[in-house]
Length: 216
Image (cartoon, rainbow, N blue to C red; front, side):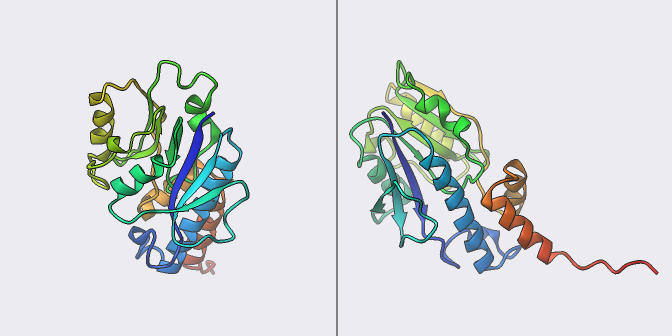
């Protein structure tokens, strides 16, 4: 069975989702990050997996459900941290981040199906911003991630090319949108209207709207 990894940061104001400001305050941005993380972990907790591992920068909070191992992130660039996360596994593993609260079981189903690794070496989940939201490896090799430029528009293309250049058979998962900006947050909340993220987004944006004065 496949291991599921979630790489995340503790949702601390001023340290997460800074691109959501100034539309949201640092505290509100951190609250949205916490909601996104809680939604992600809730989904992962319900998926079939050999292990569920939270690879965390920071401290655990009340948003963590049961059934997860918690491992601290290593220092270094994101490529090094992702590589170290895969190094925790000796068999098939799928890694996701905390930026897609709309994550649902259906999106990961192909990579977790009983025959998911039959003739497949890697599963790749492209993000609409040019990155990737999920990566699955039948035989986790940290070297497949080291040196890939992260958080740039070509991250996903370079990472996928790295896989194919290594001779791996790669299959794609659906495209998803990461929550990076206030515009992303609005669209993702609409995609997952029953999520914690959407509920909080609705409350925050409702309180920001000016009160209408009734016509006389």
